[in-house]
Image (cartoon, rainbow, N blue to C red; front, side, top):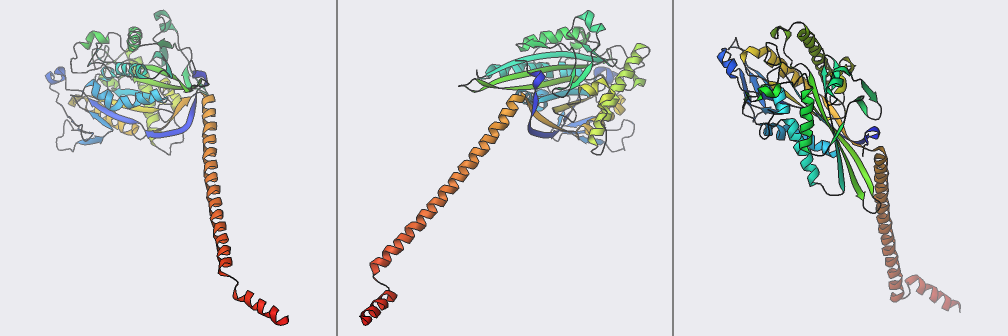
Length: 449
């Protein structure tokens, strides 16, 4: 099908705020051994998270409300079904969708998005989205045909890298971000691979992971997690493996639906799903990073700081400028934040007293994101959009004609009723004989004679 170069947005709009969920992992054995205690309480029914001050028990807890809240015992399936499934459903209808995980290193962002490397209950948002999309396609009638394409990139040191390109080329090639009026912001020369099954998506994602600065060696440590989800990370003090880049996995779902069997005309729609695992948001003072690691941390802080500035500007209705262009990350996510997309954010936090400041920072960040409003539209072929508008106008005119015909019919019926009443009156008068006036005229004529 390949309709991307000529996709426009249908005029019917759905305005909604960015859906924000918080997921709190359990206290780790290491944190417990180091004497740290859990200071986070989660009320999943009330969607409320409360954080106690670690050094001042008399200080009131800080409480925050969100669209969804997942406590330490929440399963991967619960996270997907409650927050992510509606986003993917809308992508299958032709909307753009974005799901991104934000938080400090070690809080479970990559576990939430990519799982623990196996199959089943540990599957993350990405694997569940694969299964969801292809299950939907398998159940559709023959009048709908689908084409699914995937791409996988990371932003590392403010450079965009294609994780599906050959490894030698991936390290050298720097991809540019461009924008066109018809398709918006895109990454030039980014490889898109056509896929036919969830299993194929998973294999290609694993190939991309092998090229990733972020997820390199992640699954080596995954078996240690068990039900305790701690993200992927590399050699800083924050964790055994630190989160050094932003990973963006994109699925494009094109659908051709036959709307008239007699002429074979098709309606083409295109939904795009971004699945984003952001780098860790911890402070540099806790990483003890030096050299290249310090450079990486500075670049990460630039992109996350810009993301925070974009979120703050969007949350402030009076802000005259949104700084999307200040980082590669915010440029790529421009439509996802305040644009043509249905977006969900998962804010991952840890319960430890040691990370009190980072936890509060993440929750404040998430609260601002709740205030962002997006206007999502179904993406369809412009010819279909024009034809749809003509069909709507024709339908509107047809209804007007029917209404006018009914009005004319009612008027004719009323006129016919009036004529019948008049004719009946004349007949009754003739049957009753001459009136008094007519009798006087006849008497006068007789007298003259």
